[in-house]
Length: 167
Length: 172
Image 1 (tube, chains in turn orange, brown):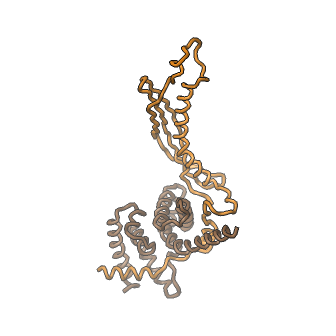
Image 2 (spheres, helix red, strand yellow):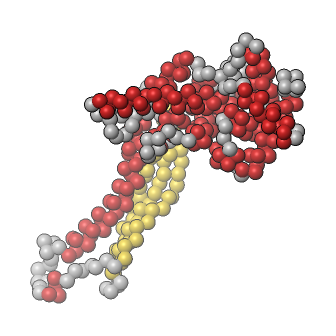
Image 3 (cartoon, helix red, strand yellow):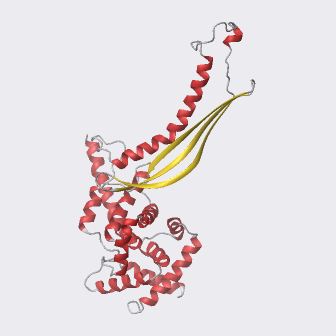
């Protein structure tokens, strides 16, 4: 086929329009209109299961690093806090007031150990696919001036719904 | 209050207009990807809403994004074991749904085009559908099908030539 024939044929094909939507499906799509996220005064619609799962997934993204950072800050604070109990007879004065650990390097690492898929059904019978992932979270604090390294490793299982949304 | 109502009406009108413009071609593509009318409709609805929710500015999603989501969803659905029996049943029998519109005179032509399209190899058919009825560029088709744009263009040429052979009686 020449370029001209091909363009002509394409034009002829385009004259045949895709079939209109079946009425029931058109009504279903119209009813499923996505709501704007802001700027509408009416009350927001009740969140569906899929919305909950989406929110949970979004929260996990920042919750894990934030938890690791909070842990690092708590460790540093605990070691320097004047309220932390010290053994009797421990030296007082300027030397004792100096922090035990001054972290000059903090490393936060997440490693995927394994991953698999599982399928479950909601009470309504709708199938939902879950991606199950085993992670190893690691926080390493280093105080190079004193040659101290504090390492904390924690296994974590993350379950993410990949599944079929229900409306 | 008034502006809220106006927004709602305007959003509703935008939604209807967007559906009117895109939904038929999305359903056409989904029908070819799923081989079951119920699955096709589910996949279109899920893909449209998913793509729409992914837009951070609230604007309608690009058609290419929705086509890509339809394809991904259809692949996920195809992997589901409990759908296999139904799919095989449909594949073995006649395709019941009508892919194209047509008046009284055009109905036969539409039927013949549908028949010719269903004879095309799947990788040609999806490119032809996305180009002719989806109105996507080769670059957009490449993203949807996860293939190089040159491959999309070459499949289109072969697909169109093949389709021409099958429809020579309709388009002399």
